Length: 472
Ligand SMILES: NC(=O)C1=CN([C@@H]2O[C@H](COP(=O)(O)OP(=O)(O)OC[C@H]3O[C@@H](n4cnc5c(N)ncnc54)[C@H](OP(=O)(O)O)[C@@H]3O)[C@@H](O)[C@H]2O)C=CC1
Ligand SMILES: CCCCCC/C=C/C(=O)O
Image 1 (cartoon, protein in one colour):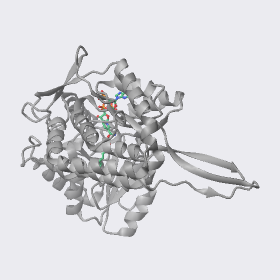
Image 2: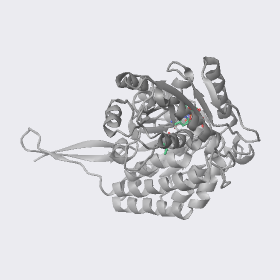
Image 3: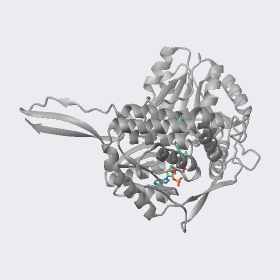
Image 4: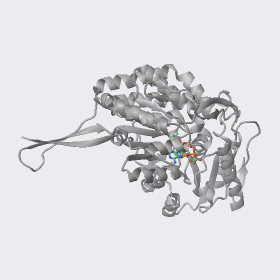
């Protein structure tokens, strides 16, 4: 763990193992932080805050650019670490996650020198009125296990660019890339206490949320924990950003290019073995194309090569943990019990790791739990619709507690845009798999979250507006 200037060794603290999910082997032992550790980390961040907030913006920008450069120099090492700890195939860690981390630091370094307030002619005589955008203080960044370093960068880069200090609590299963990124932050010259890392289980997250020295919690994870955090933080009026679960509908209209839709949906549905909050999971297919789509989707899913993420042949890595594999399997058994037709997959794959066969269900109905609840695994559900009834289709796609992402596949751009406008989701894609960019707002409607990450929304999320009034 990193607290202030100190790298903390376990000593007599309890530890817990981190596994390679492709083999089940223990690859590291991490510290279970206690309440005193959390308190020390928050104090270290609070002590560093005034100086960090006061550093001239160009210097903050320079330091963030230096972090980006170091991540770039260590890209291969970081990608391999992420793949070994999380399971995602190297093309995802090296080709997507680590480049996104670099882009996040470069993009947000740019904001450090572009924070502005406004002047307003208020309707009171002899007053000069202006605003300033100021950092919040100590921010707790609580991150999940599906894209550990990338989703941390979504929070860390804007938090630092705007002058906040942070305490990071990574997910138990995947803390290693966070610790390495914190090392690189120190190597880049970030002062002690600006970035702190405490490892451990939910009690560590809870202690941060409850700590009076924490001004803001930025959380990515399950809707259930998000609700608990919002309730606890609400009592002390801490600022909260929540990026939570999803159950993205994928609408495939009768005029869609089916081959393109199959390819894009396989990517959107199976990326990171389906452990993605934006994963395409509910496929509303125009009835006359449903058989063709299902057949091709199932063939594509069955052809995926499962293996260790470091093996160049691998297309699909393991699930992150034995618990997640159990959870996914229980949903598949539930789907069968609910009456859906298993077209391919449906079982854990052989071997020591936590692999799950890519699974396609046909004949799924809106009310089935596999169509309503976030599974976070490689499980795809095909739901045919009558293609003359667009309004009903939209109502069905929207009939979910979630609202993170959605996609429409159609060769008619007017149809696609008409549906896109009506879908209640934070990000709607047309004829493409889900993509992200540091400049593009990211977050959910309804139970998928509160607030947005990336772009100017992230800057707003890590700052407060102060009004300054001067009597002339
Ligand atoms: N939106 C998304 O991207 C994600 C969604 N999920 C969904 O959640 C399901 C369960 O995954 P799970 O790992 O349990 O996700 P959680 O929401 O439990 O975990 C996310 C992070 O929150 C921490 N945490 C857990 N409980 C608390 C708490 N009470 N207060 C503060 N922090 C807490 C976790 O720590 P610890 O690791 O110690 O538990 C982890 O760092 C998945 O199957 C998936 O459906 C999961 C991850 C990401
Ligand atoms: C290209 C992948 C899009 C979504 C990746 C971001 C995941 C966020 C999350 O699961 O919380």
